[in-house]
Length: 408
Image 1 (cartoon, one colour):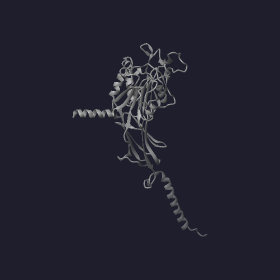
Image 2 (tube, one colour):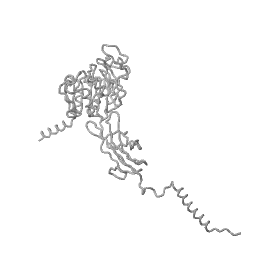
Image 3 (cartoon, one colour):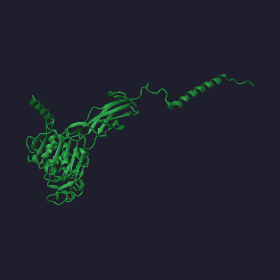
Image 4 (cartoon, one colour):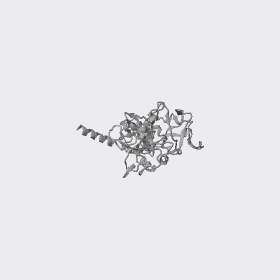
């Protein structure tokens, strides 16, 4: 019985684990990058290794994704096997899949094409990032940088510089979704092995070493110009912060860090408990939205304190920063003196976190005729004027009717 229970639990956990396809140039990568792979498996991912040119490669079948994540550690591949292409990988992202790509100076065409599709341009084939001032082990090809994006859920906020050996990236200025995660120092430059430094080559801070893109469907893409950045050699370098950085950015890419989800929104009158979609102007209402964050494989209350709610009709009439009560973002406010069809709207977009969007439509009507005040203080002068006119008319009538002129 115990054996059967263990088998059932193993089957259930395997079904719940994220299916991840890992493409490599050769199976030696499993050994040279074993630390990273062990961390991913420890986070609950089910890894399937395959050669990048295998003829059976396929990411989708009958419109459904076969994998949740794709890791490409085959920088020199000239053509993917099976039905895999740069365009099919982009479609995989459009359908919600996450992609982690590591390149090198010997970069292949499909990797460069995919990078262009998501807003990054890789350097030329055989080109490398060099830095004669900020480097490790007195090797100009192993550049060192501390210009790391200050978002803990993505980078882990390493305390030591990140070392890198590979090709450069340049981020598109027109794509608002791209995120330069790691930039080179101001003394870095790119150079092809057999040529002099070109005038139009990337230099200094314009060189992106590691970049990311989170699509509008919250699918994530991470591009690194260096496969060595994730290797055991660089991770276990005691003078570098690659262990924390590489692990954090990889776990972020597959959705194990910085993932948010929201529950059912609560919105009602202050003195009620059930949701209502009919309101009257100037009603006092309550709005609450529970939000959870995935931490170490478990969903826990989100600790953020910058979530905003808008009461929206064409334009926001009310905008409030919600108060975090153990993960429940809530607020109370008075509806505006405007009637129509409104929305309680939360559109939360922060670098490193899943995009959250929640919209609840409600109607706001004007006061009924029985709901207005019987006497309005501001109208007292008009009341006085009306009654004074009536009294004056009566007095005038009495005087006019009963007054007689004396005969002379």
